[in-house]
Length: 269
Image (cartoon, rainbow, N blue to C red):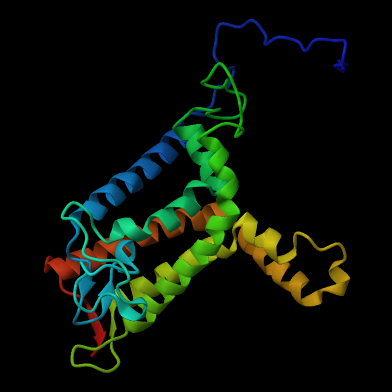
């Protein structure tokens, strides 16, 4: 039946069950919850550790502490950006100065919004399953109104990608100076590639590249760029998870090497 302005919408069918779905619809939001919660726990612990993030011998810098911009940073870890911030209080780590940028980009990302809305807020937890809240206001009120700044966090994410790429390049440093390759070098390269795959596949990037064009035929270069970003955009969910795992693996690996828990597997020099 078609609903008109004078015809009130039909109420939900009066059934005792919350949903008539018989499959394991709860599994996807549960796994998403565990994955995101695990990342948040690691990130929270890591930013308060404030140690073992720089391996001077091989020039490995942990992603959670990159770029290191404070005078509190370990010697040699600040790279080309220097130390514009003074000595930090004992309770504060250099990671706290930079994680707001990639964190804000991910928190306002269209895919991540869907994932934590469904898994943390149950709004809704799955298709054909009622919302966990009585009222729905969308993203029209604080704090969800902040989601609209996602496009600006994209520019910050590009800068973060450039910094992580630089970190990956300088990690090809040998024990005795010069060129060298270790397992850490390869892990940092893979992390940078996945970060770029996630960043450039962002919906905001796709819109910036070609969203405002009326005639693609008049802008062949931008059309080509738009199609390439579109290919990444189709796999945005995949890159969102892979890059999240890779940044944790890369950070944890540098942490273990810097602390002496493991030795870096050297491939050359």
